[in-house]
Length: 373
Image (cartoon, rainbow, N blue to C red):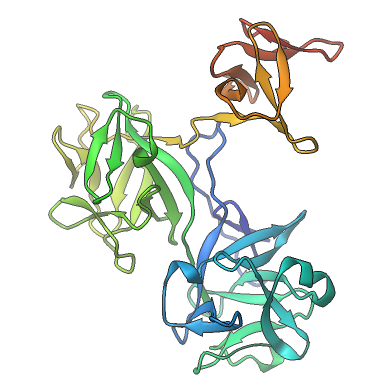
């Protein structure tokens, strides 16, 4: 059975475990989410040491939790449950080599040495946590009490050194809006919160999974700032990510309201606007639509449509489509869903015309969306 985390990382489940359902947050079931490349910190659950790379470019562990300890989880082609683990700062891969040695390697070295493919499996011998298994050698990555890394056979596991925690640093990018007032939550460089009519970087928020269906909500532009609340209902930002005040739960709005509510996990209070500032309240009060939020993808369903083979994009003129290497405004296209089915229409963001085709395969632009569009 497969478990999906962050929509990108696919983990394997042991056969003896009962089946559970895991859902990833989606802005809108009929739209494409704005997902980042999966980035995380990987630490020994038992010894609180994080995977890192030393100054002389050797694998090591550290007690730091810095950006330099971030790893990217890269899918290995079409093999869904196999990933590669790549250092974000050094752009090198975690490798298990013969004899249980752990090292890093550049992409052009891997063809010769192998050992760069891993499975990350949930560890059901303890509450939470994962094990990292080398695909080539079927050996487990371990960390001892001194922080020394190695890979060993399953028969030699001690139940402690093979346990790893994965703390996601990336997620899904969204705007948080009060549609009745056309305003979005904004965070400035100092971490101060407000509601803004803009759709810019300060209004984009990153939803990061933190377990049990809960999320951290951090500013995309000011990535160290996390949305936080206290027991009195004050809402602010913090750079602390080890507590519980920064955890939120996203639920569908009550009644006939179209949208979601955002609740503090530890305080069980609703995020809302009181006409002056952001607060949390114990009860769901939405007679003025201050508690129901809309979550919209940060790209707002606007894309470049590119040919991978030729690095060219579809552009729009008044009367026809063309291809170009540019990335200008007239190469931007909006995807819109057709109500009642799973089809989409593609319209030029600048021209407002619709991309279509005829039975002979000719591509055209039209002022109206018909069957060909």
